[in-house]
Structures are given as structure tokens and as C-alpha cells.
Amino acid sequence: MSNPEIIDKKPLGLAEVKSTLKKIHKRDEELTFRGGKTEDYINEVTSTTDKQAKDALKKLEGLEIGRMKTEHWIKIVDIMPESAEHLKVIMSGFNVTLKKEDLTKIVDALDEFRSVKK
Image (cartoon, rainbow, N blue to C red; front, side, top):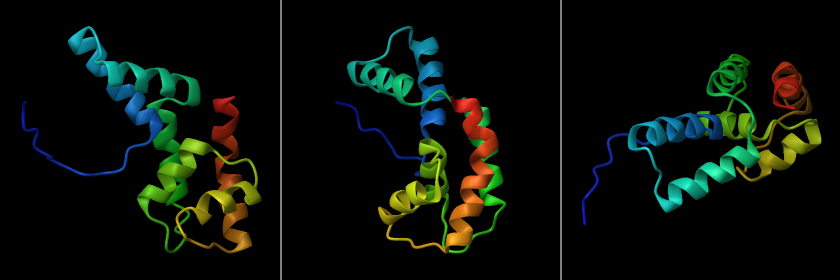
């Protein structure tokens, strides 16, 4: 069995994983069992492209809301919450609380990207 070396650790959004799997599929012609299952799941769950997700991520990070890390922004882009209450539930999983104004600001920033997703 091979010993893979971890080169870098960073959070990936679903759209980025989707595009990476496409590249691997093109390179290897066939995915492994887990890769195939992952691809099936991602195709069901997300419809955003890697570029759209990166644009949304850049816009959210530009809001400069304190205590928010890249992993938080990526999860928000993956889920695309439609209301401040939905976003509040998502953020409770990270044990991060935000002001009502910040929640509204984030949801409003996602409006232009959410219409693309549907």
C-alpha cells in the first residue's frame, strides 16, 4: 500500500471538489469507487460552478465580518442559505454567533449567486 504525503491542508467547497473530480476523471478515464460515489453526491447537491463559488466566496470575504474564517465562508457558499434564520442555524454548527445585521448582510450578498444556483 502506498504512503500518500499530505502537501497542503485547506478547506474545499463542493464546487471545487466537483471540478477537481472532473479533472481526475478526465486524466484517469475512470474514478475509483469512492470517487464515483462522491461525484454522484456532488452532482445531486450542487449546481454552482467553481467560478461562481469563487466569486461568491470573494464577495463574502469582502464583507469583512469579524470572527469569520475561510471554512465558514465556504460552508455558507455550499449551502446558499435563503434567510437570516437559516444562516443562523448553519453558523450554530461552528459555535459562531453573528449580529442580526451581519446575518442579513451575508444573505443579501448571496442573492445574486443564489438565482444562478436554481
